Length: 632
Image 1: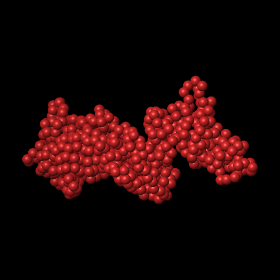
Image 2 (image 1 turned 180 degrees about the vertical axis):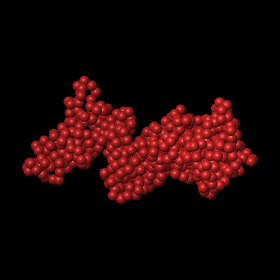
Image 3 (image 1 turned 90 degrees about the horizontal axis):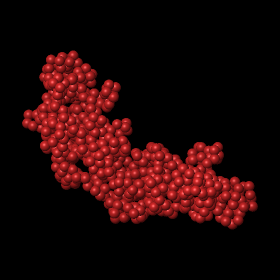
């Protein structure tokens, strides 16, 4: 049995519940919102209430598909942000990433009226319908649209504000600042205003006998009060026109009315059905939408919010197939030892996690199998995480097998690369997976050089005399800032984490010939423009010390503005969490195991690469393995 937590976030109360996969409400609770305090405190209360209900229901996080939230205002379901909510005094609040960080559970978000509509479709009056529209008639007029069983939200999740469609051009001013909105004429507030105006004009009316509410207006109408009859007739005409517009646009199977006025039941829906039949386009020739009342009441938002998670495919890690490169210096170890299947020979690099146009990796499991990671990221932009905002996937992860030495190279920084090459610069990190005895690499210079001396040594072939040659062994770490001159030597196998760039300036190539029999091109002028002609600023080695946490030893390899890389040595199980701030990339260097998440498991072995989308939530690495974990 799958479960999800549904949260109906209101300006007054936070209501939440545990919902089963057949949309039964298992547990329910609420706490005051206290909306004028900082949003972080509201989010903390939401997380606390959710986890209390999980415990009360006798469940664990592993039993839960996630947390669904219905919030007032404009909600971006892709990023999990509440973009704007006047009820909560919120602007650009990263609600889902925050709840995932606090609970370890994936989180989905939509407008509260949308969630109420979805709740009625999966468990209420519109159960079994593929298309339905909900209008909530309360202080304002909320709207939710379900098409083919899914919430319709429009671009950036800002659509379906049905209450703010124009009913009467230039009419009564609405709370949104426009005039003549449906909300200004068909809400409970509007009915009370209309009745108050009638009461002032008719002192003898029953409308003056008590405080005017939507119910008291209908009660007076039923008692035969002429002024009340006129008010109700005019109100129902306004509402009828609004409903006819919704029917003509969507032609849903059902249109449901919720909110306080819907408590009038058939006294409201019978005249609405007659009005729709008489006024909708083709009403005497084709299917006519039935108008009815919503039945779930305040449970609709909770159940609909939970359905955001229960109706979606279970979140899962994505296993990736790499792109391959057969540069002339490569070897055969990636095929013989790491299970890479390709006819290319030699095999120099496998691009294990890549959205670069020169070699994207491909998803091999789940519903997105066959798509490139770049296609997946374009369809699901929130998978990258909120720490990254410029729209270009930020990193590229490789395995590199150097059977022969690589050319001496240098990479530009962002400013130079964008100006000259039109892509990001290239800062990278090397983790030495294996090295043959006597292997070495070049890492900066032994001493400071002038541009003139560097150019002369490139020309006369003596550049390597002043490069900083470093003997290497398995486990060594090198952070290669943009501008650092470098070269991987023969007999070294490396895991490389780098910016998502393929811009490399070749400085020196030992006089080698390419496949065409000609010397490979050098990029001397560009290289000298960007190179730091001095010893490296950073010493070799990891940036952190090993930290033991249960069955896992974690070592910070490198941390910079582009990526963070850790070495994980797992001997049992290691609980982790991919919150909304960053994806998690796992590259297995040795051993085997499985990533357990959402009730399922994705196995991995030496050489495998897995991508865990941001917001995936809690997961566990089980097995005996050494992996590189990369995040933003």
